[in-house]
Length: 337
Length: 135
Image 1: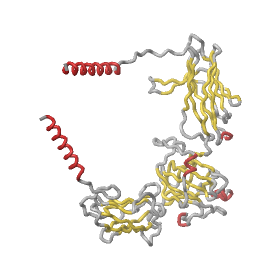
Image 2: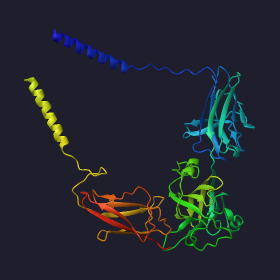
Image 3: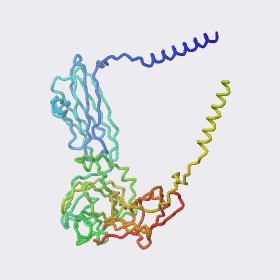
Image 4: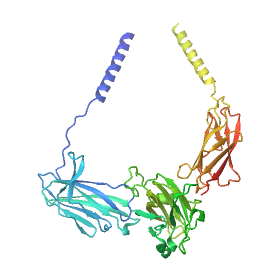
């Protein structure tokens, strides 16, 4: 009797386990999804990183309607703050050409874009039921420090309309300038405030805003090479430099290497970092020196101006004998500390 | 008969567990293993700048008799923000710990670090003497 009870118990347990396994392994049936029988859309933001005034934010907006219902009529992007000059929408729809190394290939589908206030429109000129258009919003000065939303709207020939709102996107307080050429003994005076490079005549005219001096020196006894030095630094870091009258400001400099900001070094293979407002807000340059000697390509220098008004990151894109190419992101802290 | 075997097995298991836990592994206050090694020296020395790139203008000289490390740095090196890196003999540790940039600008009073041997019984204090390359 006892053996029989054990047998029944064991058999029940085995059956329960097998049933559980069978249930857990059961595949759900798959069927092809059915497309909604109406106008549909989808938008993505293609640009990464901080949104900087003067730079573009790129979107791709896809829209489609079953061909039995009609065709696409128009596509509109409306920004909450009108884009700056250069804002536009492509009238080509792109596809990935598998026969051409996967390149994006455009097909003309509409009339050239029309900007009207904060709205950009492309009207379809071909009979198409699906397209993806790209929209390039150039960030205007009035959007600095604010947020921007973009509303995409597609209309079809049957009178349908559909919209997608993108954002809000915070617009950075930073400014950016790329590829400033500096040259030893001539174009060597850098103003963070003006985001410009001057020669000695220009520096004399903007004496109050010169924050850095670019030098290139070679010595057999030391490795000086490319350097950024504040005008008020110890003269031993400004060898053979006669500063124009009034050029005497100080700055704090922190030398770094391999901080390759993607905005400042767009051509760099490894430029995958973005410096944003928060980086400037958090960095502490207290006690840093007023010079950075022996700068190489891909080096960078965090700078704080003597009046505490600006912090900047100056990236060394390229160097050659007697010259360098610099790019800069600048953040305004306020009216001085 | 059967219960006796089970009791014996349990007893054996408990004895084994007690024996395994009986030995205490000697570790110091940092959780590092205290070994029997008596080696106590710095084998090499590196000095990095704020960009984490070496600022040495040549190889650092480690004098294990005078307990002095002499290092010459490049012209323009900011001596207030330097990151020293010591390579020590096996099982040694360093005190004080280096947790960030160190100010080595007071060249008249070189900073000191103490190497402690693997058995934690020998201590040797090294001075780091920094000089700057002339322009």
